[in-house]
Length: 333
Image 1 (cartoon, rainbow, N blue to C red):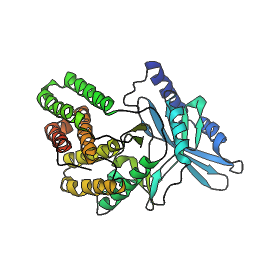
Image 2: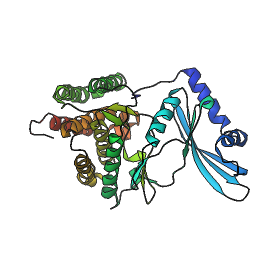
Image 3: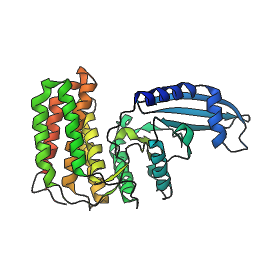
Image 4: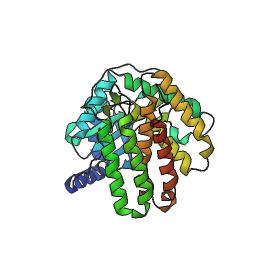
């Protein structure tokens, strides 16, 4: 699992250069020639940048033929050869059938010289944007998609252990305290609770995981729930994915007053459905990784500025509540 990657200045510069180049129709046409069928006579292209990060960017490309036919793609370009690992995992996933209700969006082409993956463009609404009565039912579908991912008979990389995830959370908290030392008491108390809960984890059978599962990674097309983005794929306790997803929902309900009263309903819909689908996964471990993710998100709150940083004490309290649940002797499989 790629927990933290900082591209070099040279990699950042090269990525920015590609971003500028792929904004030009001629460069986009060159890529499209490699992926469009021969009968598709390209007449016009439109590329629109969707997201830019230090180590990758995504551009939506719309291709129109001379007859008016349109095809849309997502071009995802990376700063390093990690793109090849994502491609290999994506191809392994694509060999397995997916149910009608949803599944992972996998890459269809890889251009190694560009470190560019091509995905079909999926139209829909992000699950994070759905806040009406459809939400609990869609979270239940998301739980089933998560279970399907965890059942895949794949070992995509070496095992990521609970200790490794703990160490990453501790390092993130250390960076937080260097920049925002006023939060020391809340952060140290919460990390102490995480350390106490770590040795209490139940044994777990590892599985392929998404690694960054959250409502913002799911698109609802109206017919299917599509899970995007394999950039954090890994091999670990599947409880990590579910705990991460629950923590992201909990954080949303904390900082968004419009949905704060939906917390119990949303979390229950996801958690209960997943554990029913995957009874071998430990509820204790789910609670632990929920707490661990909430701790990691303390740093995210601070980075987003005072408007969200003011919620840090409450989020730390949520993390300690999850870890107290994980340490409870009454919590069984």
